[in-house]
Length: 74
Image (cartoon, rainbow, N blue to C red; front, side, top):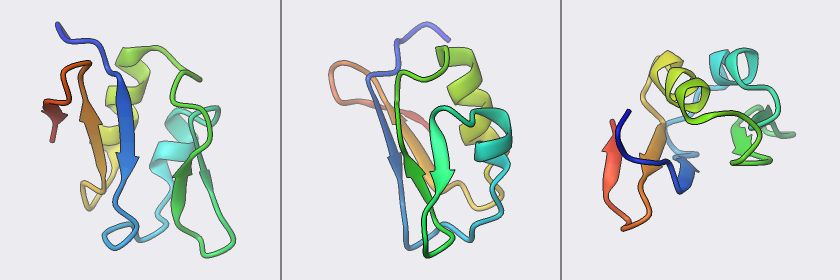
């Protein structure tokens, strides 16, 4: 990945609580009391791991943005 991840956003409407993001990056993502993913520390893993976690989401509920605010995933 060329651009640095500056912001990680979970779309709670899309999230189904499948939790592969938690498995891939447990220091970044956790499930809350509604069984929806939340970002607990967007610097809790390196960019490659965060991208892998976002890509693992079956409903693409995780969006990644660079420093300029451009969406870099999905």
